[in-house]
Image 1 (spheres, rainbow, N blue to C red):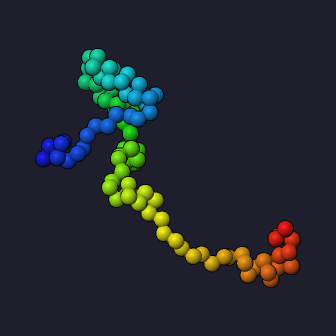
Image 2 (tube, rainbow, N blue to C red):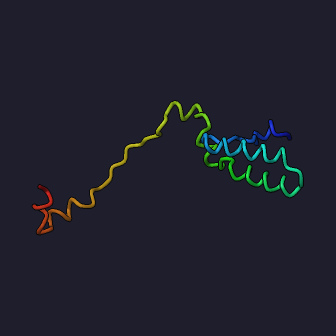
Image 3 (cartoon, rainbow, N blue to C red):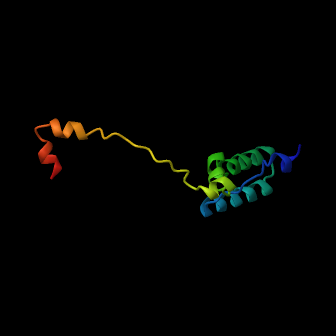
Length: 96
């Protein structure tokens, strides 16, 4: 399997400042004269790349997500305070 099959692409930073930093570090990699300088530049490049979570946030929506974007369900929640306020001596003050 190659990169196209795995869909394991190099994704450039989404933020303009991070993108500029990525490009500067890439230029440092190209002009590096020693293996150590190349490694340092490559490490800096890797730190500017977006995380997997950030990449997933920028992915297009699936067909299911487009049809029901919020996937909302109605739930009934019993009020925690309704009985407590009526039994409390301060209940009337809180209702105002």
